[in-house]
Amino acid sequence: MITANPYDNCPIFENENFLIRMVAVDDAEDLLPVYAQPNESVETNSFNCTYGYGSRTLDEIKDFIQGWLDEYAKRHFVRWSVVGKQSGKAIGTIELFNRQANDFFNNCAILRLDLHNDFEQTAIIEEVLALLLSSTFTLFECPIIATKVAPTAKGRMEALKRLKFFPTEEKAVGREASFDGFWILKAATYNPA
Image: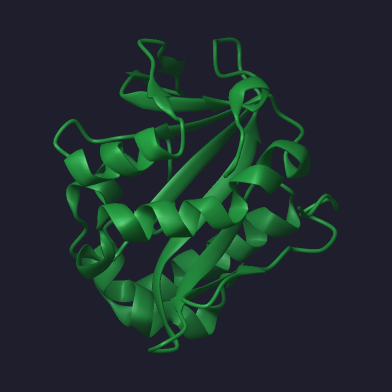
């Protein structure tokens, strides 16, 4: 388990299939299909987010990646690239941050997992998330991890169930709207296999 402050030194997670490391502008070509033609799970993750979603050109996604890096430097969130070791290409991104708000999700790690359509599969989602979940509670100093799930994303729901997430009726209050459809994982009940 990694415990250092992720804004002082961005951690790297890996197994034999995937490498999760800080996003880089050089990932733009690989990530463009994830954001130019987002699947429903990626679209669902765009709530209250101003970077990346809807990028249509290589220059746009490069600008958005630079925006993610700038936000990291300000300690607002961490955005990792998920790299398939077999191809050496980024297949998606993961964002995490400790949300401060006046609702249920205060002091909660918000997780966004955006994957290319070819990798939006239960086993892959479970494997990728399992790499960093046990460290997330410590890294982001929070008792809960929350992620938004599209109502039709059955494979993603199954992966989250396997990881001991469960749905909640609680809503996150955003800048302009409230958002539902969250699944949560509590540190007190998380027991990795």
